[in-house]
Image (cartoon, rainbow, N blue to C red; front, side):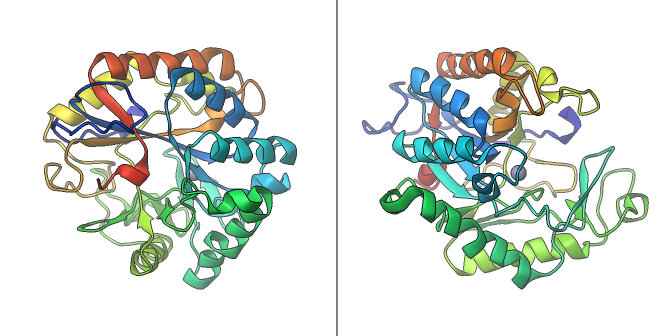
Length: 321
Ligand SMILES: [Zn+2]
């Protein structure tokens, strides 16, 4: 996945808050760990690990797991969602079904075809369809401040950002049909916005108009080989990831992914911050496989190495602080 990774940002000194979950007295910058596509069985192992490390993270939720339609047991998802809130992690909106009602996967570049067919219909998958089941499971917990489902969203497959003072679009992140050769040049430039990505941009605008912050990511901590049976086994090595994070803070190279234009990494509100995207499913021993025993220790090592280097681990509700 290295070809999809990017590097951004410079280090900056951040004032330390006594209420923060990290323990460093000063920091070279803030790293935001984000986990997408849960809650699932694997989320429980991630939560155990984060608790033992005294780290809070941000989780972007697909509520279809609560109905058991995401490939795993509804009981696991329900327990994981309740624990996410009880443990004080932040949850945000990632749509009900990750656009599964529309899209078709297109190998070899992991480009997704036809995710966003029309705006109003897709919006419903972020609104009542996603929020309703979450509210049902959480009950009174739905009103906890760490439930940010109404304030924070990440669009599946699409690295768009909408923060005060910052708009980033990804005009070719999803395609309408399998004609990537025509749409995307060999250099990765995207001369024509696809309809699917244009709809995702409209959705992002809608969220921004309604004071919902849309978060993309700077670095993807993912499998290095999607072609093997158990992709979890190929999760990028921690030391390589640390190099990417170091480079993102130290470099001025701010291309996030190949379909996104280079922007000024030193401009607020992104300076001194790196958002790392990873996925709950990489940390389990079933389904997509063999990640728990291998990758939970990697998560622990990542946290240890980030702290050693003086980075502060933070959650996205604090991103603009
Ligand atoms: Zn996702």
